[in-house]
Image (cartoon, rainbow over all chains, first blue to last red; front, side):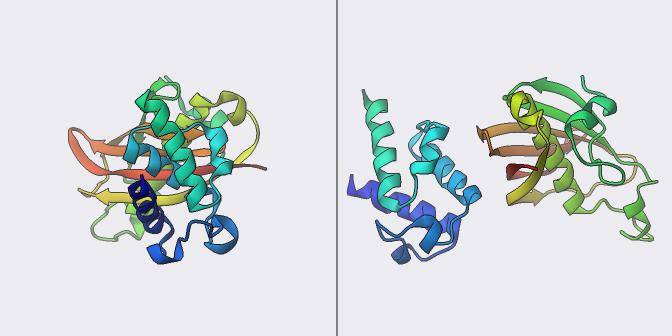
Length: 82
Length: 144
């Protein structure tokens, strides 16, 4: 599952145009990485596409760091596996 | 399905920036097909280009964006009923063929993800059976 973190880091890096190394697990998207609401939606959609999951809109506000995003993705990946 | 009067109830854009003329298909939240008739009388042709009129690609994107608003409005009518400003975020469009006076552009929009404050959509534009542009747009919607 560590792989998931690296994969999502790569997706985010591409969307927000930063080096993957800048996207540490706890770096705050909005305050530290310059993410805006549109990019957040793109991150959510990229994660959905990558893992073929559907993440509801309510979760969007929870995606504030890489580790949060990985947690939400894993939650829905597990649901999908059931 | 939606004529220009009905389109204007939803789109805030007006002359000379209304870039779609008709909606011929609308499946709420699933698909919109819009028509843009390109006339030689369009103002932009006088400068783009004086001796060789070609529709500017950015205006094809604008037409795609307006069709996307129609998709959003069909999916979220309670949202669209309020007064909104619409913004484009990410624009990933490839232009495949030029558009000339007399062409009718048929724009098809399907959602990738729609939420209450915007969305990401896949868009294609065709003239007859030839694709002229395609790609992905993200739009965001802010209440005035």
